[in-house]
Length: 282
Ligand code: NAP
Image 1: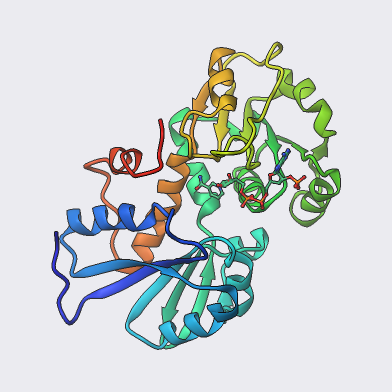
Image 2 (image 1 turned 45 degrees about the vertical axis):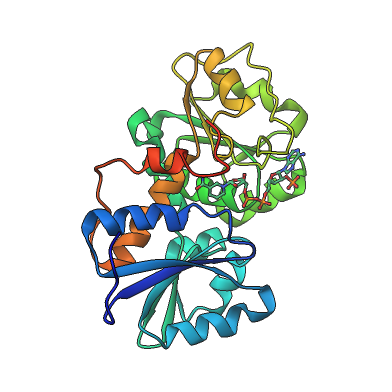
């Protein structure tokens, strides 16, 4: 365990609640590997105190904050400057501080692409089906568009939200009704669960996997549990399955770089540290 000095740099994650966040465990691992004079703290802050908390911290020696629910939209609004990714997605999960000013960024899209890297998807020749239209779906859609995905199909239980997402981010996207979501599996190279279905305590995202494309990839943004019903069934149907933990790690890497001025170490792998966290089930 590193012992921070009086000159220690620090950053944290702010949410309400924040007790389930894996970020402190993840960042502590990297801080320790790099032997940094730094620490990373979870902050439970209620919405009515969020802005004053951020403004105050920005005037301290803090490097910045990761932001989790329910503050991601407010974080974007209160920031003095905003990155193109955060502006497009409409939410910020990373705030950095410089001379009292607050800069908002969103690294969820980068995290999603990092998780998919091992699958080597040829985006320019691929069709992606994105299920969901909330914050995670917006980050996924932004990532796919910046990767020049050839064809994008969106579906959401509430169709209006999918249409709004398309209007905001992806005017060329096709929208299918939620009840017809399985009909487009036969032409989908990438299938993304960006809904909260499958989260511990929620029902599973059910698909009819009887007609799928050979070599297709299924990604689940959910990571508690790691093996959702959606992923298990996709793997059973022959798809390559990728869970949401790699996206979580992928979104944290640019944060670590922004806070501590150096890349997060690749080795030893942080994944086993997170899989062993209380509340995680493989
Ligand atoms: P959100 O903004 O609340 O959106 C929730 C989405 O789930 C909406 O599309 C909603 O559809 C859909 N949904 C909820 N219940 C449903 C049901 N019973 N049937 C069908 N659809 C349902 O949440 P979010 O921030 O996008 O998060 C979505 C998931 O991504 C969460 O599990 C979150 O943990 C995960 N996530 C993971 C990472 C990562 O790093 N791995 C990062 C961000 C988020 P309606 O619009 O019809 O309500």
